[in-house]
Length: 270
Image 1 (cartoon, rainbow, N blue to C red):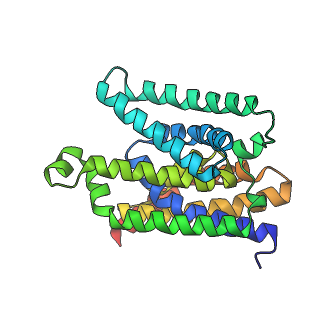
Image 2: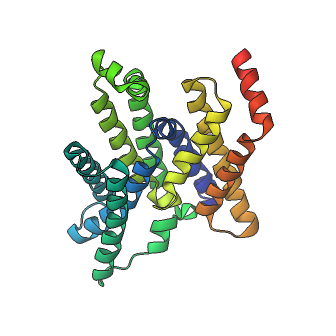
Image 3: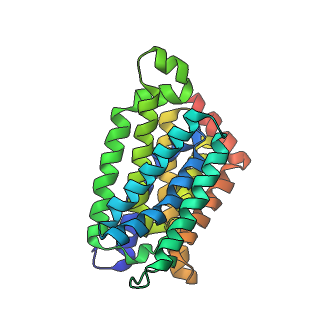
């Protein structure tokens, strides 16, 4: 069954969507959208470093994302600039630095379009194994730290008073995001990863009456976006990664209709 490229793309995309649901919910709750974008942009720097040092690309991407996260934490503590200014600086500088480094390496042939926008139709069985393996690791980590993550999201001071270590919860989310970006880069690309983290979760927020419901609905919306986007891509011969994001956007727009309000009221009543 996995010998068919379209089936492999579906299986890989669904695995990715199941992970972006809960992780994206925390990104939306904690207003970390710009942070997620910054980490995604740093992935290209990680690719360049891994090619330069001849190390595994996934290791390089995770290392670059964590390095940027660490730099943000240090600079935030110094309080010289606001968080959004720091994120803007780190986001664009890491993307530009990665492009410049790749440009210098004339001996390396690299498909920048595939890195930036993804090529889910080219995923292999080993890619699928990586997606589901690391995806399961992230989901188990979120389930294990659920109470601390929720507490730190709702009220940092209260979480600190109850000994739940909100800073540790934030670092946990950073690590999970770094791993997801490294794994998902081949599926939707560096520039579209954050869209699939945010759009399904934002749509789910309109339909949910509890955090648990939002996580589940965000995953379902993500899966629907993957299936719809890939079929759209097959039917109209459009780029697969952007097609998935467009499908997610369509579902988000549906969540803004009066039907979504009725759904949420019925959910609360039950």
